[in-house]
Image (tube, rainbow, N blue to C red; front, side, top):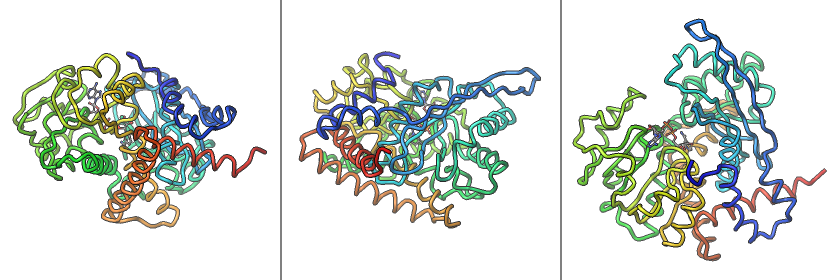
Length: 416
Ligand code: NAD
């Protein structure tokens, strides 16, 4: 996929911090290498009687600061390389926010369009049946990601309970009725909105005159759009896998949001709101203040970065900007608010769900949102302090803070 190699991408992002921290080369290797990689075969009988085998993955990158933590993705692109890069990112995200977690990622390589609910349940539960000894409330805690949500998390929780008894903290992003936390569904988009407001303020943008484009209108993109619209910004374009919709006066986001919510397969271009259809290429060429990629990795790469007409990028998706594109944006002084900061709202809410499950307590939604807001303000303050003091980008500053914490934990825990 263009200039994106998931295994190399992350190594490049780490280099400036490793240099500044003057870390021993063996320690660098330890921090770059996943502690465990799991691949399982999951054969299931489909509804039509045919047998099909799927591959499931879980990469446990690092647990020096707490149990492995990260999402499970159901998508045809899921493989070990992608899980490795995404697990790696989780380690730095949780460390940046000082959450008591490490980093992991996993998923199943599958095309959800070809599976019914019954097949998805069997697939999900069989996956957990294969990996249950290697996950647990204080070992590794899965969560939703692309293609998964509270339904799959409920199935994981149930499959794990069959082996180990009632342990809701084994997985986050569960339905409220099963120990989920109120606000988890909205949390990542809520955090993207806080990140955008903080960065916009730091760069002197007025939120009421801010034009925003959002690639991806799934869980994260749609909630970020709704909160930013409520904050006063104009969302002039959004897109999904089939293309984009545009209105230079600002899209009617609340109506679009309500139209899309009940039907996961709905396309933004089918909406009744006033809009014109645009292609993926046209979407990226629009003049906008803030571009928020909220779909998949490598959306902005060496072949489209020069055509962007933006003042700032807020990374709602994981790794949406490749290294080459990132270097180009650095040269052009276009600030990039990095994924490990911007999309951490979900893992902040997951922390409250997990710690609440341990105590059999459920946090109310306003407290969840207050916690996320405070976490974003504190972390942004730290990032901007380091960025200014060291004269480095927000991404490099974020990695510096995160790596320093994980490396310190490694030395404190020792090598025996
Ligand atoms: P989702 O499956 O709900 O939505 C993904 C959206 O991206 C859909 O609207 C889909 O149509 C769109 N899309 C796919 N390919 C596209 C393309 N080429 N162009 C435009 N749109 C495209 O997933 P999500 O949970 O919203 O996750 C989105 C991103 O955010 C992922 O990178 C994920 O890893 C990251 N993330 C999610 C969470 C979370 O809590 N869900 C937390 C942190 C990070």
